[in-house]
Length: 281
Image (cartoon, rainbow, N blue to C red; front, side, top):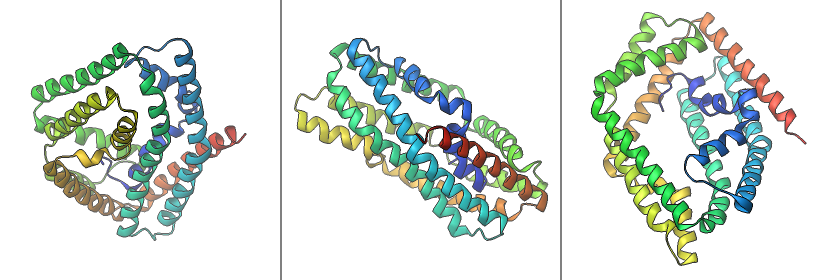
């Protein structure tokens, strides 16, 4: 979690999904991204396209109302000065559960279509993911962690200012202190991604259908089980520090900042209402 206000934490998913123009073309964007990994044609291409449309509709009709419900609750807590530190933890868990819902929805389609891929198509997927990991390793080697932190601070300052207005000096200190607590886990993340890809490669070429389904389901639904212990510990420490920072920032909001935050939330609620109505039928 890299956003440092309660609203940014809870809206990270919504921002990407509820921009009305972008969301309406989400299925097309997914198909474009999929084409970067594997070339489909014929009936398989048609079937996958139809399934992406179905997933988009499922998300609009079942997930967007959830986002709206929890966002409304959060807005009310902020408006009434009732938000607690426990609420911050609860909403972070809720946000993570949304991603879990998507995993569960995608899993049957993955089990359906992956066995239909040719050997060449499977190899292309593996090679493309490996190229992404290798490129990331090169970027890490070329970028000092201290430089990365500077970029992160500037980006976060801009993002937060969009939501609450100009940050005050005390709030800036909260941000700097949180950045000072961050550990460089970039290589640990890549090691984890490499472990996942190596296992995915084995499973993708698994000839036994029962073994394929069981192991692929685990890779999709519970990939965290493959995280190295050092990475998991660092993530837990980072999460605790981030939630503490978020609540500290929330408590420091001026009346003007809080008013702007609530107004921004209302804008997203309007977007969600529009999208929910569009996909209701």
